[in-house]
Length: 247
Image (cartoon, rainbow, N blue to C red; front, side, top):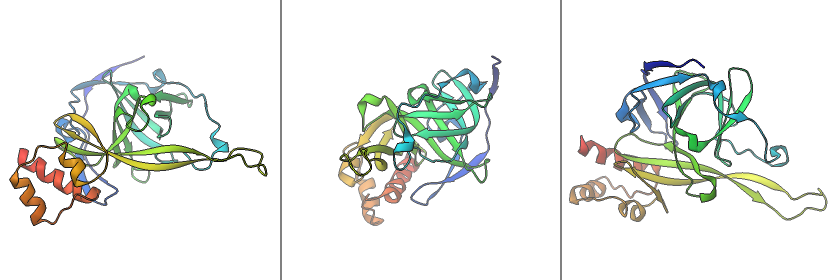
């Protein structure tokens, strides 16, 4: 295996959140995603992961468990400090695994707990970021280790979305001769405040304020902007205000 040590420098890239807000994030800037990349090793992706073994027969399940069913180009930041660049990767939001095609054209799988950050590029323009994920304990199923939380804004106060794929099992259908199963996606949220990661019970004012230490100036801002902290767009706007105060 050949390791190449260098300083990672990537251009300023723009991606779009579900809230349709444009967020600029320089993944070469340590402050952009709360991490410090420093000097890293770019490794051959063939050296990581296990050969794909299907535990569930997904062909018998309606829907799919992936963040995106299509393969994307991506950058896989491992917790050991290495970086793997892959041309085909998918995130399994049910099993909390990274599926990717290595340089030997073999489909591999690796658990989310091995990763610090995953960057997926847009399929139509691979120079632009589609989504950035960071790995934290699964707030839905604690038995499944870590999961992929999508970064929705930059700064010391950040909002994360977990697009969790959940398996629904119905009653036995005698006409089909099987138990119907299907995947559906449910969204959960979490926030990070100065590096402290906390799941949110609800995306609302009470849940958010319970985890943040605010002052009258923040309350005045919320009142003056008529921001009720009821959705992603409003929460991101508030967090951007908080982060601007810290500069």
